[in-house]
Length: 247
Image (cartoon, rainbow, N blue to C red; front, side):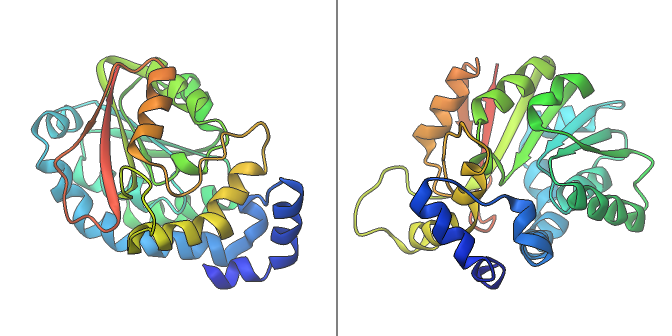
């Protein structure tokens, strides 16, 4: 991932000086494929068991005919893992990167779930157009989005009665306290070279960056009309924490 970033160091330096950004698509195939491979083992091996431990969520996902959205799916491994775990459901993935959509379509085809998974080139704020959904997921992508409140608002409005949104993001410390711990340090590194420039490439931007603390997400969720944000009891899932947003 750093190799992909360093290939664009001149553009990144220009962005730092101007307050601009560098789009994910401009980082190219190395970044796209690296991100997909980083998360693939967790999604393939751990996602289904983790969700199965959350009774009410597992029940909703297991309901025959359930419709599930995956916003910012990247390489599609999260969506495919969900489709394999919940064969009675159908899935819609939304992502703004055209080559990621094509990659995800290949992944779904290879896994034999492409009859129940539809990957769409669309901004997350367009979730309403493809709903309604019983559950909406956003796996490690909300902090990249320039306007997260718009996306969360659209997701909330696309939910069926009793529906939930699940946000998986970095398990950073709740408050800033220097010196930063090891997890925060590495996430700040990713933020400077990848996530923050991507977010700032589409103004106006919230410019969240990889270190999205719980209070920041709670603020976005509140502004989007959600009533509560709860941390789900999913532990030992890499660098990630699962949040449940309730309308």
